[in-house]
Length: 174
Ligand code: 4NP
Image 1: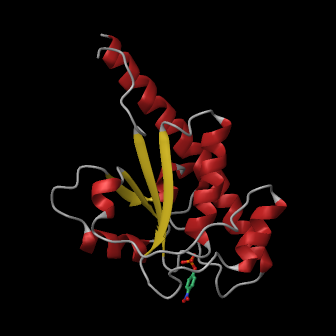
Image 2: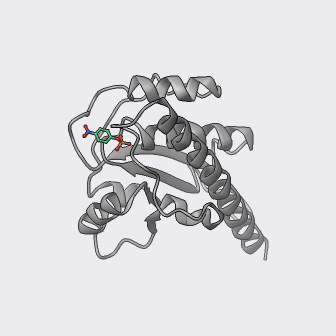
Image 3: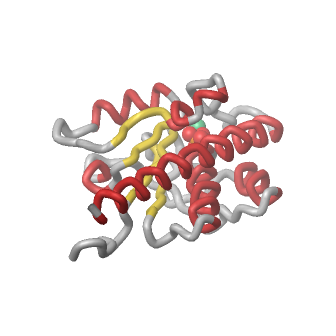
């Protein structure tokens, strides 16, 4: 029906790192909070996964949970999972935390995939950084730095998706 919203989310975002216990679950929690703050939970779906399988079924790293909690994000209910080829049928935005993860995703990408596969920080070029550094072997300050980058890139992603949804709504009205 003309002008009606399609059932289900209109944008589906998957954040991907190596272990799915530090960077990508942080991005999931932070971006989901931004989406909820904009009243878009029904229109934008958010998930995260890792290219590795070591932490499947496990909660995020306690340091990631603690750093996020300091800023009001709750990551404790999230559980690790490994990315798979079938994710390309589910997600139209697949955002990697670093080039190694992006390389692994490119190797998995079906040729017909028409969504956006790229680096998360490419959406926020003003940060002057292509990769979210892996804090796993670092200290608490590395987790705070990671959270700063994720918050800023999440803001940029939200703006991009808001513009996209608004442009689609304009098209539907024509
Ligand atoms: P993440 O960090 O990719 O941001 O979740 C890591 C977590 C675990 C490992 C490496 C990075 N690991 O080697 O187990």
